[in-house]
Structures are given as structure tokens and as C-alpha cells.
Image (tube, helix red, strand yellow):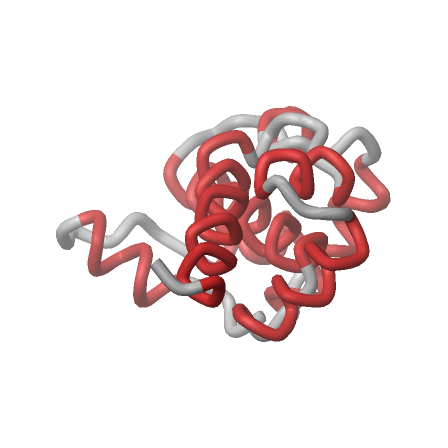
Length: 129
């Protein structure tokens, strides 16, 4: 296996950890340990490989999950923020608006569950980033 392939596998391992554990406190040093590289190398190569920083990728994953909870459940917005890994409602609301273009409450008011396979809904509803 080439060094490039090894780097890609390490990055994928860390990205999979973000996808799986998005609601947990994850930071660059933790993700770098998962990838078995230094934090600076991890940040640099993650961005070069995936086109966004690890933090932005994590925030986008959290917002995607929040979008699903807001459209499919009656869970209060504050609880949704906590469930997806935010510790501050203000940060959640600001990040949600930055990514989605609407407030969590506004988004909830204008969306309805879609009767389609989950994989299609996730792809269709994914924020542009």
C-alpha cells in the first residue's frame, strides 16, 4: 500500500468517527489520534482531501442530523441542539442559520416529512456546506 493510500485510510477512519460519534465532543487532537497523525498534519490533509476543515465537516454532520430531527419529531429546538452535540443554543442557532439559511424554528415550520426512502431524503436534504 502506498503512503498516499495509507493517509487516505487514516483520514477515512477519522471521518467515519465523526459520522458515527457526531454528538460527542470531538476536536482536532482527538481526531488526529484516531488517524495516527499530528493535529496540524491532520487538519491540513483533511481539508486538502475532503475540501473542508474537520470542524466544518463535524458541524455539517450535526446540522444534517438536526434537520432530520426538526422535520420528523416534535423535540424542542433546545433538546435537538443538545442531542446533536451542541452545548450552546446560541451556537447551534447561528451555525444552523449559516449552513441552512434559516433558523431552526423557521426550518421546522417550512418542512414536512417526505415519503421516500431514507437514502434519497438524506441526499436531497443535505446542506450545501
